[in-house]
Image 1 (cartoon, rainbow, N blue to C red):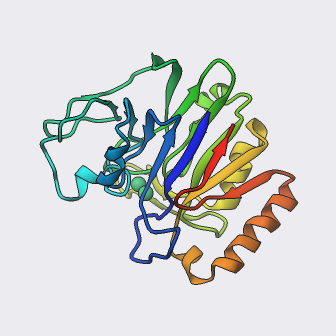
Image 2: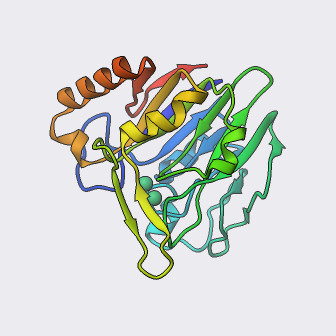
Length: 232
Ligand SMILES: [Zn+2]
Ligand SMILES: [Zn+2]
């Protein structure tokens, strides 16, 4: 799979060269994972998989673009939005030669969220979007993943997790060290995108911190940037 990172900035004010665009990953020029920027539609993808309806992952939520532009793509997301012809996947499905499996994630109490497991006949990748956690009952799906693409909103252990006082449900983002711990049993390689403010304060130091975590955990870590490409 030919993977192109289109954007690596989380939902924050800060911006920097190579870390300016919001979430979007293009696979083999036809499958788009998240669409945090309307410009990404210019790649004319055939399939769009949205992890959740937060504006940095679904541009049309920001300005409430209720009517979709003309699209060739089939759009999948965990929920409907306006007049967008959104398909809500319940279980795995096949599209354009990929086997795609939505996996529910814990992230928000306002919107539903999915990670997506994408496999062709050779390789498997996981794209998580924003998350606190994936319920244990789904962990059996996470086997032999060639590349995990996940978020780096918070470097500190524990990230930023809150609890709804009424339901007791947790929401927010877990920390980078926690994500490494969650995914290490299932992969040898993690690509981080969706950087939070901490990353922009000192990028050199931020990269060093990732390097340190890679060493400590004996895992390959890639720090993504807008325009980064990798073949898995
Ligand atoms: Zn986000
Ligand atoms: Zn989010």
